[in-house]
Length: 281
Image (cartoon, rainbow, N blue to C red; front, side, top):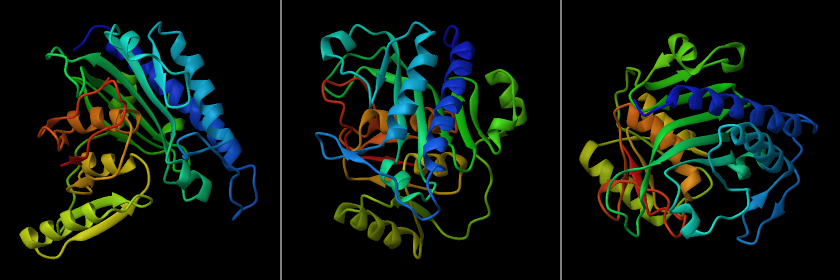
């Protein structure tokens, strides 16, 4: 087990719950059915008050670990600076902002602990996730994992107290056996693509009739990790902070997140933080 991982896991869990509390305060402040106000960032993606409040809560909690924090809503870090990091946090304070605006519950807090992966540095990255926390505030559903410690799913997560290790003792270890009669694919609710449709057609040719589930945010990755779904293909742009926490969970559940450019597990800390197309399976 990498040095000092359990205390860092506990810090990440605390940060995720603090962010979830901030998100729910905004989410629950409006009447049922009302849309949440948002602004557009320079890349035309939406941002809300909840994104910024969650970012502030996570940054404050993780700053105490002494590790750099690379967050979607934080200040940018030059590539040369990031290349000097041997260990850092990679954070999406509110993944699935479009789902949050629509108030369908399919959004999450994503926190990953990253380390240099020991492979030759290349244009497709130099780091890998060694721990991940993914928390869905509306359903109070938590997924978490650390290298060598397993992957876990916990309902009513805020009712439990204790360290990451103590929490794992009361959680459900992944994957979980599910009785399914058909191959199940999970796809993005907000980002469909012709390539995804073509992938689904190929799967149907191989497996016959399939079950297709649409969902927002990185929760799709966790459906594969827990065994509810067999595959999650992604052929539209994502960022490193969208996938890293889920990737850590998938790894410990015995599954893979594969970069379709290389056919190998996704790497992180690239000059551009945009991911390649990938499949989780």
